[in-house]
Image (cartoon, rainbow, N blue to C red; front, top):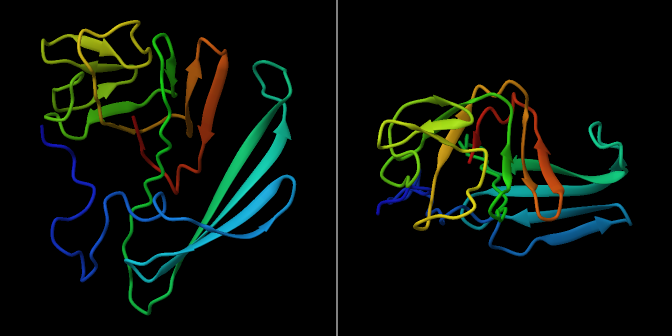
Length: 193
């Protein structure tokens, strides 16, 4: 099956890019750290760019549960080291394992398959309103609940746009834990699932 392209087949503006970029596959240099914060840096090899990442552990009280929890804040700074304009796509996507019964969380949004031939759930081009996508049989399939079983392995790649609030997440039913990602909608207007 074809998969969505993440890198150009040919060099892009003279640069030989690597699949999914360099930030995930190369070691970062630790610049400084405290008990609750660390700052890391990476000098890219394929493009003239340096990246700094700050990871901060912030205590807070979630509004829904009232229980004390921790929040991890990630901040990135991307610096162009050349004198020419470099277009880029910052596609932060943590790999989050899901289990049967888990819930995919997001506010009202529009879902659309990136590449229907890659989809094994949606498979029909065009927009749908979360939590549903249109399936090949003409019906709707829920995307907010991980099924208790699948007849065959599933894969999906959907863009979510028009989110009514800037967040998304996953709730693990077995452990009763939730991972929620909040973001600036002016900087990150789309979420993929």
